[in-house]
Length: 396
Image (cartoon, rainbow, N blue to C red; front, side, top):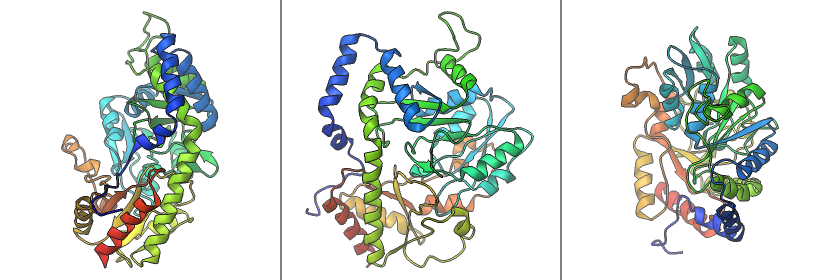
């Protein structure tokens, strides 16, 4: 491989190409069947998702964003309420809170596993708190025992933002079945990537499932009868059929990503440019001082903290003021895909300027240091080696 050959951050064509015959057959089946909205394809996909995730109910919806929105609508969250969520995450988590009329209350993150800090969650509880939304960021579950304990004591529901974490596990249970409701995205970049937008809501609660199903069709439980206002949040039959082809492979996709992550770790550590912070330990055991101690290596690798990390992203921290952006520019000049997740914490977004901010030192540091590298399962060993060589050369 020459320096001019590109290494993509993601290439869904490689995984989809292996299933081309099955995908074409599913497409043709829907085309010939003529049922394009809801119907048997959607019901089958929902059953298979529920079985795989170990939940009682799975409801297909139009996107991961709409999954979050309809989950909050099902809980009756609205104006005057507060919902706690991390500031270091994708915009949709807080954006959907705002759309209900409720107020996002931001919490800081753990510096090594990147998930929300349960201690900050507890500090931010008020009499107006109506829900907690932990995000299973980059494919690793948040500290759900601590979060559920806090929620239980307060008497508020937990909505898992599992958009990046299908197949991830926490103490033997899959994401989406750990809280009151779970929300998934099937955006094409996800481990279970669709062919457009699609999402899923999961729950063990039959009444909540019934509400979600009604809300996704404008709040109607039968045609032209609307006890409440919902929205058009339906997953279409084509997406359900195509995703149904890929669902049996999601464990294999995760294993391939985990193997790539392990190989990255091995090569970076052998080169002396990186360390793994707290692999296999509770995140809380080693994360308390993450913004204070000087780094002993220029890179910190993703820490897997008592969770089955499925690596929707492989995110490293590049220590030193400005060094992340310098490395990013070098990688891009070498045609190596990389991305910053996320360059600006949500409390710094202009649309949330009216909110009481507070201090978020970890999130702000992560925004300066985090860099995502290619991790998709079909990444070749030569491509992975080229990424490593470029990065180790940068630090030489």
